Image 1 (cartoon, rainbow, N blue to C red):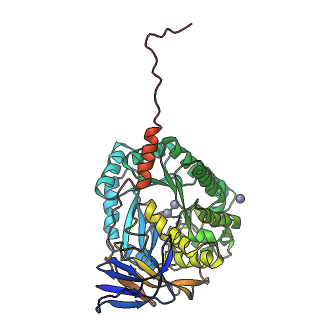
Image 2: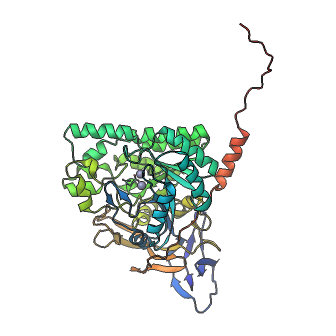
Image 3: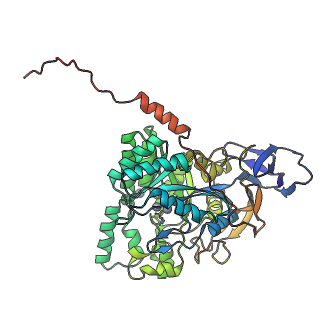
Length: 487
Ligand code: URP
Ligand code: ZN
Ligand code: ZN
Ligand code: ZN
């Protein structure tokens, strides 16, 4: 099983250069201009195209049981749609119910994940605290390749955790060399504002955005960062959607703290006006948390990517069809939160990023793949094009155009948040484990072909943090026992 990708320009986070890429047994075996491959190798013509590491989406929720229903996209359909858009790895979330064993939930999600068509991995959420949770975090890191834990500061009465849980969990993760991530929204404030909106008779999807204003996110992001800093721990803020949260991250980074931020492709290009749509079903289709924002936040998010203060881009792919969204017909707080977009992330970011001069092609690779691989310790197996890396690649056609639509997408959901958007730049071919899974519009993914990817703890930055913390350990004052206390 070998493939030669011939005549393309290899684009990594660091450089662009002409080279053929030869893949054998699922691994990149050669990156060399004019490479002579065995005659048996399948040849893919990449003339005029870019050969880049496949996209890594660090934030998806395939078949998530959530708000009384289950996300419509499963691990097979979701990773297949991702492949059609050039994404070859996802990191999904195990979300135990409060009081549920983390290991039990992890095993449940592993069994669901078995149908994935491309490689996948899991963050595990800490939704409650006890000695058992503390113990199980250790088991997950030692025996199950988990190196990141998720915390929801929102969803009060369900999976929200308070500062005490954050402190316990962050400290434990720090011991284990695992990264803590947070959904930063002040859940008490959201709860209060939801009630206020309903009391005022606002029951439609616009109430969703009104009950989650930017300050709600800014406060929580700032608090999570402060708690992490108290412990000397790194922290990763998922789906940063506001200027306030971006600034909190930028301030912390400027002060030398290891804080990372993720932005969703949709938050960069869609604004809050969607909640004013006269059609309830359309407005409800955009209900996600945090909500879409006023336009000026988009500028802050783009600037966050350009400056390097935000490092990764994701989708938070969490699909619910219209009949599922309809559960909140009379009360916006009951609309299942989530939007899709795994198939479109790469095209949207290329078109609106590279196509507008906000990103270079190398920066595009960095924010769609490499940074994620480095932060979550998948690098250099994933996130780059080099000998020995997994042959998860996308052959990107910078001139190709398409119009995004639910009528033609491969996502298992009846709505596309980018409906009608014309984008230039698309995945012409996608390779997963050295096999063509998407080629010229032909989706060839295989149910169950994806592998669970272990992610070891203590990525390099943790070793540095540990050393730094060790050298700055607090020390008590050594007083003479006999010192008299003066009255
Ligand atoms: O609305 C969203 N984002 N749904 C998925 C769960 C989460 O908060 O990430
Ligand atoms: Zn979230
Ligand atoms: Zn502002
Ligand atoms: Zn999410």
